[in-house]
Image (cartoon, rainbow, N blue to C red; front, side, top):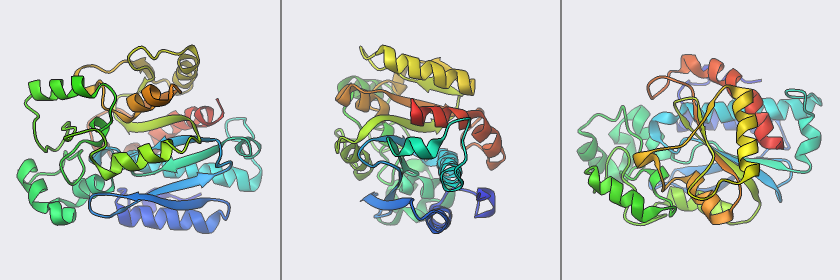
Length: 301
């Protein structure tokens, strides 16, 4: 399997291209599609393995400085494909056989502009450079939004009015490094891309990966289905992550919230690792080992 830390480290576009290119060479049954583009016309990639008519969706890097989630999903994709190719089990499960019934769809980086801005600065925002420089004050270390200063995980229609009210009460009324949800739901190409893919109807359940906190969010509003709770408890037991409920500006507008409200199917927000964002690369192995079994379970549950 690949040593991701040897391929450039942080998950900017150059590193993602190198890793994904290598995965495609190693595993002929892994497919790659470009399902959309960011504000700066960077591709939003989808990696698929197994049955494409019935899939679990794993999506990462909704926020710029949470790029470690991209590396975690690419590492899992690598190990999963290696296990399939060699006929091995993962965590005691014959994943190759299972993937014929339900496949895995991975969006490694929902917010490629935000990741690039956090790692390389405002100059990587192209036509949006002045916007980024203005709202960040020239410091993009804690940049979470896309190039237009919209927080992708505040840009979905779930409980939209309530979230906008809380944003306004907090003084967030215009583009910002984080937590500005835009002018309307799905105003951003990044949120429209993942929403459009989910509307194809092939997704049985979805996991959105963020950092940090070692938490799992599984419910939204009145949606507290027993099956979703059962899945969440199993993922919690396997990882040691605790089940939590978001508060304040973390409530509403998110992808997980939208998915469960729109489709009445399970979806989960996984807050990986612990510390201060951006989590350092030195935590990659530890985090992956903590959540590896959870990822396998999330695929087969």
